Length: 565
Image 1: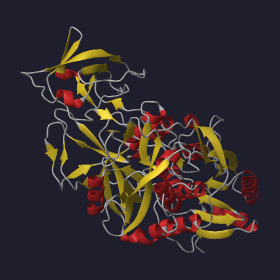
Image 2: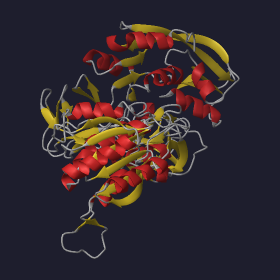
Image 3: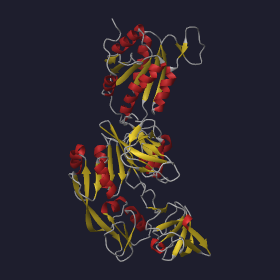
Image 4: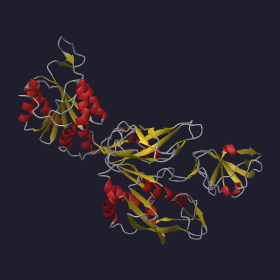
């Protein structure tokens, strides 16, 4: 009688195993330095804005842009030099017309300034700065929260923490995070010919290398290997190892025992324990003699003894089970090339590494580019891969194929891409509903870019101020906090006179909280996010939450009872 009565497909074997396990609920708090390779146990949101002040993106001079409008090589503008703002300091002086501050890259922009003139377009002379080129308002300034906004999703539940996530977590104010506890994986080898590494090697014996290889694979997945040693080729020895594994581990894995006699011992042992035999034999080479079974509430997976077969079978059958038990997003296959949907320009004389979010839908790959910004933390925390625009070309044409390099060993691309306006209330509600089933990515975009993302089909959900169809309308309250008869700061362009316009709502709020303005006008939900409780409602705006057809019902159900925000 053949050992393997019925061979099943690899996919069916994986399905049978994964369907027999549940996600563990135990979590532990670890420092971010100990979080590498662990699985996030909850959605983690930014505690602070990045940056938490308006900062210069170039070495140069902080100015009022309008003072430079007549500047040229032949007729430069001369401004009084007020001082030097270094990184790590915070300016308290206010800049007036006809003045400038020398400023470092990354230093806070002083009150009154609305642009940075790059140092290469200037000269200094007797207490003045000479400016040879005009700049437009907001030039070379990264506004507060321009990278990551307080309340923005940094790491989604189920994410396998990679080095790039560590930096994002640190920047967003997290020194510790909750992760799923380590899985305990019992491992043993089967075979009379096996001896432990370092023992005397008698004729006919070989060292047990699988026990060390499998243990390292478990550690690589953030698990805790429980090494049970070597079982002899007899029923009692194998039964003893399995029993020990059941007592001490979450799952039991063995290697070896694929010969006729050994296979009979293993089946006899698991059947003695009342096991449900899920399958014994898979249609693959290597890796045919894999045994899948469930003993009580724990899986026992028997792998082949050949080292190559053992490793491959571990990756095919044990790894998906461990990830399922941890609630991790299953890694997806990494594609090699992707077709450009629009022209991608190079940076003159330099090689451009273009970071992108990768989205998978119905086995098709889509991409959305991220800013090529050296100071950006979110670029790497959100990116899945990058492609290169060579330094010797002007651009890569739409329709060309480019090579993708993935940032993680096990890519976890997005299933759902959310773009558009930042609304912590709407985003948290949508993330709460969708994150159990989908891998999500949110990218802030202005209205023009948001509409382009909708039209290109890359956006599954979008938050914007225009109704583009398939949308739910939300009314967002606008509030004033502080003195009405003082200097009011806002990012809203149509709010009226006697206001200072800045680039982000967060910039306006932080200026107000730092005492650099007397009042602030922003959406009420953002005031509440920063703990500002005294305000007066002065108006409202309409937001529209667009959804693709496949998510329309889910999004409408999620937002049905939201009301005004």
